Amino acid sequence: MSAKIIDGRAVSETMRAKMRSRVESLGLRGLTPGLAVVLIGEDAASQIYVRNKAKACESIGMHSEVHRFEHDTPEDIVLRKIADLNGDARIHGILVQLPLPDHIDNAKVLAAISPDKDVDGFHQSNVGALVTGQSDFPPCTPQGVMALLDYYEVPIEGCNAVVIGRSNIVGKPMALMLLARSATVTICTSRTRDLSQFTQIADIVVSAVGRAGLVTADMIKNGAAVVDVGMNRLSNGKLAGDVDFEQVSKVAGAITPVPGGVGPMTITMLLANTLKAAERTAEAAAVAKRASA
Ligand code: NAP
Image (cartoon, rainbow, N blue to C red; front, side, top):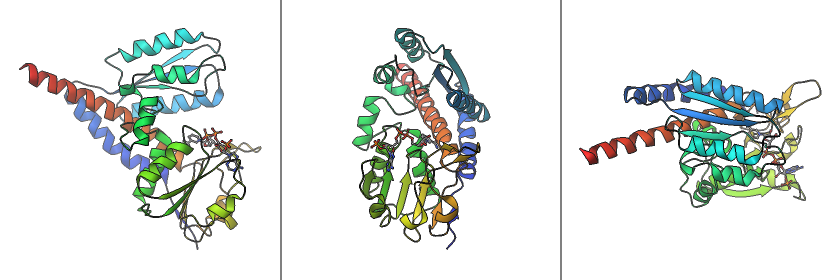
């Protein structure tokens, strides 16, 4: 069997083209969606991610701005910037690029973002909403995975899904989203005794670990959908996921490549969340105008 390639770049392009016209419609109402990114420190990967996010905003006509801080910037300065952005009418989405330097409290910074502008979906109230199935801003990477599964019509309801990894930004929200769609979900971690025992019976496997070669062909059921969130830089400089793509694609029914799978979808979902936040602002303004007329 040769797996169908789940092409995240193509799906992203299709979704972004639709978003571009929604941005234009907002423009006719005098509103340009705006994303503010807060970047602390000089982490090379973060610099690249932030640049890509800004470029993506530009490509669909959205405003974006990056607020850069030195690595040793005190926490209260960062919190003050977030407070300013919360009150800035030009900004509809705020994203703090992770990871943060050790002296800055992750939870405190994420909690400072207004939940209405929390387009990464990491604020506790948005996390809580996700648990109850009512989230406005689901975290971008798992939301991107769900969009890919839907685009390729991978059945979710009633299937066995295995999520490898339990981070707050990928593994846990991924499991919740699959559960919300009535999959039977198993979460595996570094402490799972026999990973293959779970993956071998899975119809959907999502790997979000950060270890190249973790998922091999013998771990995958014939015809399963395999989604590779992992991003690993190999010693030869190449980018690879967690999945042995060449071998697994011989048994899987569908598979995401790395690069070109989940990565582009993460940014596309960030755009989608920011656009959604901007459309709500426009709607609230229209309601207020009608009420005062
Ligand atoms: P993370 O916070 O380091 O979490 C990794 C998870 O993998 C942990 O829950 C860990 O378990 C688990 N794990 C480690 N070794 C394992 C093993 N041998 N078997 C099963 N589980 C194991 O990482 P993350 O932030 O979720 O990111 C995961 C990967 O996705 C990274 O490669 C990251 O670069 C990539 N990523 C990609 C995108 C994208 O847009 N494509 C977005 C975000 C992240 P414990 O909890 O027990 O330690």
